[in-house]
Each structure stands twice: as C-alpha cells, then as structure tokens.
Length: 144
Image (cartoon, rainbow, N blue to C red; front, side):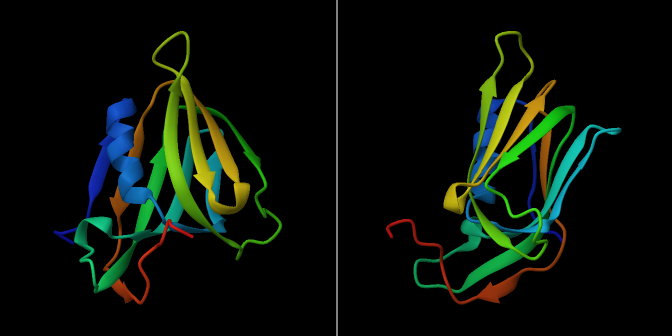
C-alpha cells in the first residue's frame, strides 16, 4: 500500500508526529498486547486518516499497528480488559523522559479516563498502516 503511513519515533519530537497520526484511533481491548519476553507492547488500531481528511469529507479510517519496543513494564487504569470487544478512542500519546536518558514513560490517554502507561528503556515506537482505507461517515469532534 503506497499511500500508507510508516512512522518511527525515537524521541519526543518524533512521538508528537506519530501521536498526531494516532489521535482519535479506535482500539478494541482485545487488540492490546504486551509480550514481556520480547519487551514489546502492541495495539491494532483503526486510525482516522487526518492527513487525508477534507473539511467536508470524505473521511477514512485505516487498520494500523502501533508498537513500542524496549518496554520494561505496562500499567493501565480504567480499561475494560474483561471485555475484549470494548472500544476506546485514543486521545493522546506522550513521552515523559526519565532523569536518566534515554528511558522514560509513554502515556497513552484514552477517552473516558482510561490510560496505558509504558515504562520504556528507550523510546522506540512504530505506527504502520497495514490495510486499505475505508470510508467512515464521521469526523472526530473535539468540541463536545
């Protein structure tokens, strides 16, 4: 897919760009995973294609993979882990550097007060579109 995004983030400025592309993505709780052996946190998301959105449409979403490497631990709050089909919307992804670089904390903030906190040895993130885009009737609205 030639028009799909592939974004890498290795510092806070990179992550801001990746976060803008992931904003308003929808994620199923069952599509979140952490593999402590490989130290990888991954999420399959339905990303809103902000880069292709015209003011009056058409609007599109695309299936994408969001992953973080070198993850030491994962904590979450207010997530419906008991409901794998429950949906959440990604509001923000941010990085707080540790006192001793290059580590820090990645925070994935979800609508409704949910949050995923990744303690990372270093920032190593990837956002990759993995399928064709499809039309969606609504553009996310942040004024409500």
